Length: 358
Ligand code: NAI
Image (tube, rainbow, N blue to C red):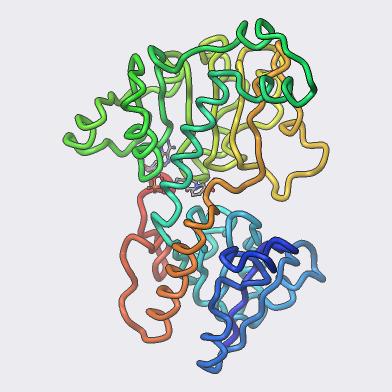
C-alpha cells in the first residue's frame, strides 16, 4: 500500500542529527521498515497547491502521516479526491489540519500519538509565562546590543508569585501546566473547560473551574491556551473577549494559532491591553515573513515571546511520536485494536470528547 508522509525539511541539521526523526530526511525512522514490508513510502515537505507532492499522492495513498509542525492541510476537497485513504496519523498531537467532519463522512480514521509531547509543551508554556512576566526577551536583546539600562527592563518586570494564572483547556497539557506552576505560589490557578477535572485531580493542583469565559479571563493575570482547535475554539480570543482581559495581562498560546484572532491580539499587545503574547503556533504555517506576531511589541518595547512551532518537537518528543506512529501502523497492518486514547475519529464518528461538544 502507499503510505504518504508530509514532514518538514530538516536540511543540514537533519543530516547531522539523526534524532530529528520528524523530518523528510529521517522519515520518522520508519522508511526501511515499511519498505521491508513491501509498502511504498513517499515522504515530502511539498504541501501547497495542485502541483504539490501532497496533492499528487493523496489521490491513491491509503495512509497519510502528517505533523502539526508543517501541516499538510487535508481539506474536504482533498478528502473527496483521496479515494483510497483509510487512515490519517498525526505524528504528534492536534489534528485540526485535517477536516475532521469530512473524515467522519468518508469513514477515514484519524489517530494521534496522544500524550507524546504534552510534557514538552507544558514546559514551554511555563517558560513562556516566565519570560513574559519577567520581561526576559528585551533584557537579553539589550545585552546583545551592548547596552545596560536596568530600569528600562525592571519597569515592566514582575514575579509570577501572587499572580492568577488560568488555562483554557485542562486536558493533558493544561493540567501539566497547572502541576508545574504549583511551586510558584501563584495567588490562584484556575481553569475553563467544559470537561470538569476529577475531584482528586482538581484538589491535587488546588484549582478552581470558572464556567463563564469572560469572567474567567477577567480574573487572570496570565491566560494560557491549551485546548484543541475546532469549530468552538476558532477565533475564541478575539477583540470582544480581549476587552474582558485584565489590563496588562499576559497571554500564552501554544495550542493553535487560529484560536486567537491575529490582528486583535496584535492590536491588544500594541496598545498595552495585553502586556505580552507568547507561543509557537501560527494561523498559517510556515508563518509569512511579515506576520505581525513576529514583531509586535507592547508600548515598552517588549512583550513578544513568539517562536516557530517547536515546543512539541523536542528530540525527546520526536522519539515518542515516531515510536507512536510506528505502533499505530503496526495495529493497522495487523488489524489489531488501536489504543483508545489515540483515536480522534473512528469509523464514521468522533471518538474523542476534546474536539468540541457535539
Ligand atoms: P487533550 O485532549 O488532553 O485536552 C484538551 C482539553 O481541551 C480537553 O480537556 C477539552 O475538554 C478541552 N477543550 C476543548 N474545547 C474546549 C473549549 N471550547 N473550551 C475550553 N476547553 C476546551 O489535549 P492536549 O494533549 O492537552 O493538547 C491540547 C492541544 O494542544 C492539542 O489539540 C494541540 O492543538 C495543542 N498542542 C500543541 C503542540 C505544540 O507543539 N505547540 C503539541 C501538542 C499539542
